Amino acid sequence: MIPSAEELARWTLERQHPLTRAWADDARRLAILAEEHAALDILLAEDLDIAAQRAHRLAPGKPAESMLNRWVAVSNDLHAMFSMRFENLDPARPFVDATPMSRSPQPPDLPALVAAAQEYYGIHHPLYVRLWSAAPDVDGTVPDRRFLAAPIPELRPHDVPPGLALRPAKSVDHYDEARRAYAAVDADHPDHAEQAILQDHDDLQDAADEGLLFDVTVYDEWAGYAAAVIKPDDALGLPAYVVRELVLAPEHRGHGYGPHLSTLLAQALPDPTRILVGTIHHANQSARTAALTAGRHDIGGWLQLPLGQA
Image 1 (cartoon, rainbow, N blue to C red):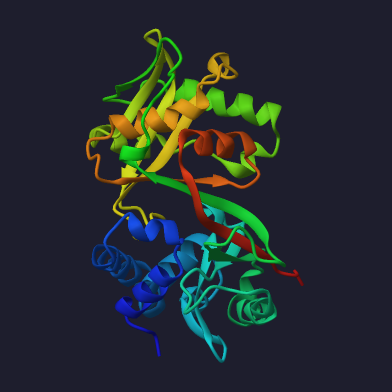
Image 2 (cartoon, rainbow, N blue to C red):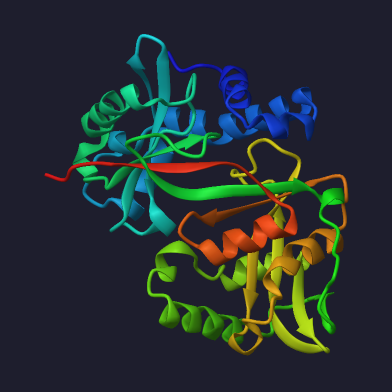
């Protein structure tokens, strides 16, 4: 039987990093998590029409039932909600998500998690199972994206380089320049393309419409973008702004601006009672270092459990 949204929320909260339990009231966080679990995990386990739409778009020719979420007894004391996902909605990059769990995963659980993923979703040839843990790592898994966060009042700018500032952006006038900035990083670091991609133009415009997109400027010259969103499904139940873009133009990289973007963004956002959260790929060392230097904390992350492909 599929658990209630409230049960899933309670298990999810119990698995969070202890540091974050002081950042938000448990009752408020449970309400946020229950809403998210109901709208995503439970709905995708029960609505065959949505499953059919997802199959048509992402896995043509596969039965709709193969796209339904599954609540699985992995072992005597571990249950998990399995879900078929695709990296950046790319049909060529299938994986199985198993984030909602009755407890955190441990190394002895991994063979059973692999077996369950293959049993229910092997038809899609998924590349890995994605897990979430507040721990730095779990033996037998590969680190994926880390969540780095801090309450906005803790993210105070200091020693900001001369000329560096943010200004509200009403439209996405520099999208082509941002695209070239990503291309330049990808050229210097070929693995970067797998770690981070520029947000869609329409998504950035939505952020601008909500007052959450900012031009990074150096002496009033455009130097990049900083953007956030409210209430995505990767805020861990926190009342948060989630970082959706931090990019610098090539000519402004290498000047020590990176660590200041988080603090400048935090102080530019309209609600100072929220938490600033963002995910950064474990291998993106420069971005992780910049976030940690700014005062954000590593509060957990996704892990990949590789699957053998037939």
